[in-house]
Length: 448
Image 1 (tube, rainbow, N blue to C red):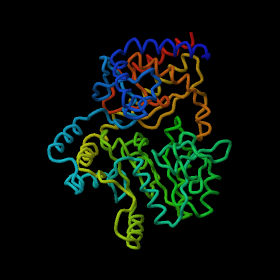
Image 2 (tube, rainbow, N blue to C red; image 1 turned 60 degrees about the vertical axis):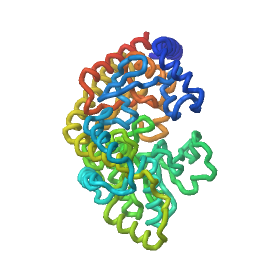
Image 3 (cartoon, rainbow, N blue to C red; image 1 turned 180 degrees about the horizontal axis):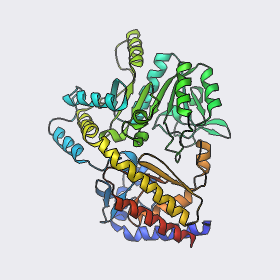
Image 4 (cartoon, one colour; image 1 turned 45 degrees about the horizontal axis):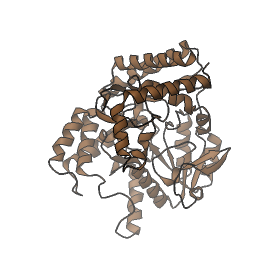
């Protein structure tokens, strides 16, 4: 059994150890605080639970070095931005080559032709557009869905995350929808236009869609930002069938579930969506994203355009589909996100899940391990969650923070938000073994 006292004692010890081991990061944090709000260029960088930010010096493959010279086995990989490894050689070469030829033109390049063909082949949808982030892509598909259906509602699942899109910041608390409490500066009530239900709740889904006012369902095939919530058998097909029956568009956001296999969940397992979003991994870490759609959706989009006026649609930015992003995507799609990469990642992720389960069992804990392809979670509770409410209830912030600090201090990075791990094409068996061994040491320390 792990007590609150043991957690607090470990956290205190690890905070002191971190501070002593990272003097250059401490000094840089002090200097950065002069003008960066809260001391960092963006607030995510504070979410690691450390007393001051860890300043990175460089990274390659599945390794990262900080400014104090420590090396880390990296299972966070930029929270999926570098899911296929840091600076894959083909992507780095493409960026360097394009950098000397121009970064943005507001015109297509030859890379655009290859990128579109690869997207269509991998993800089984014929038409595509490029944006600068998955947040922007999700805003675009919501706008298009509302425009072509004439409906105003978006349906999301409790505990979802689809980037910085106002419409999705609605949670269920005690069964009632409320604005997410972390949402800053919201001046209108998005609950007037957003429906939220629990994942895996078929009756709630059927009732919500039967009203006939939902333009689209925006969902991950498996929820990955509230711990990990996997779909019940048959639920995704029911979702596909019900949306089709009620004239609602189905949108898969596969920014995280691209980990499932070649072609993501859509390409490897299905069912197919009407629209599809893929964000940060598609350019190997360069800011970009894509959204794809069926031929029927494309036709309906053209009818909407014909009925309106020319001019800015509210979709896209000047840097959307810039030349640098297209070069990076071409290299990533053709040379990095390949079947061979998944052939390495998926068995190694299975091995990691098995090792973590073994460590947990040997230490007498009733935790469980969930994973979807190369993405895994060890969750500090016995039973898998079926929805966002259950997943939130299983989170243990102080315990998770103590675990993360212990791992960081021993040269292992996992995602700071919860216990998420990623296996990349560059990850080795040695790194997997080491993560399991360090977690074993951590649990033995906690249990005493």
